[in-house]
Length: 204
Ligand code: IDP
Ligand code: MG
Image (cartoon, rainbow, N blue to C red; front, side, top):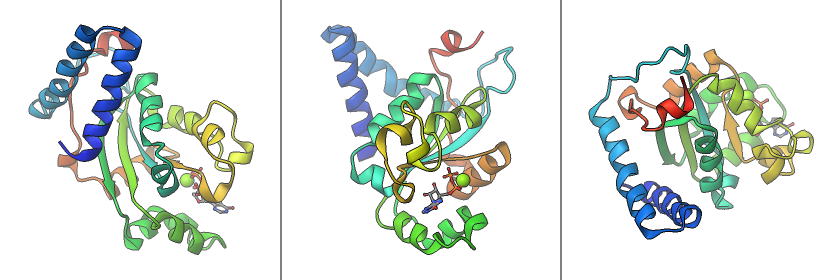
């Protein structure tokens, strides 16, 4: 388990204690969560059966360097978890210009492109793959308008940022975009197919 995973677990356990108010409940939560993750790893390739179509849809979300520097990673992850989406990939890295130029290939001719590259390589990013019904569109709505000045309160950008040059988070903008970006940032083996114990509370 790496440092980021330890931090995420610690946060979840602290919230468990806060909401549930009992050490037993916290211990129970603590014992279940990592094993769910490990079970998922063992169960790679095996997916929950459900009548709901499209629950395997995936999107790429990244906490940009400003979000990492401002210690917003935990709060941003929490929003997607709370909504009911499933985390299937997570890593922290210092991005290369090469990867970024592929990621932002459509923006190469924009006047802000050089400063965008500089910003995105200014420190580590935390990149994730989230899974669930309509996850691409739902996450775009949760992330909010590209320009934080126009982002609604309640969205990530609307709550945590003020200027378009430092808008905290990336979210894929379409199914095709999500597929392209996930392949760019992750190898297939780094994405875990795991059965969430809350599955029947999220889907019929
Ligand atoms: P998105 O992130 O909401 O999908 P895009 O238009 O794809 O928005 O732009 C990618 C990123 O480029 C933005 O998230 C933001 O970081 C940066 N960006 C977009 N427009 C501007 C601008 O006018 N000035 C500076 N940076 C910009
Ligand atoms: Mg975009």
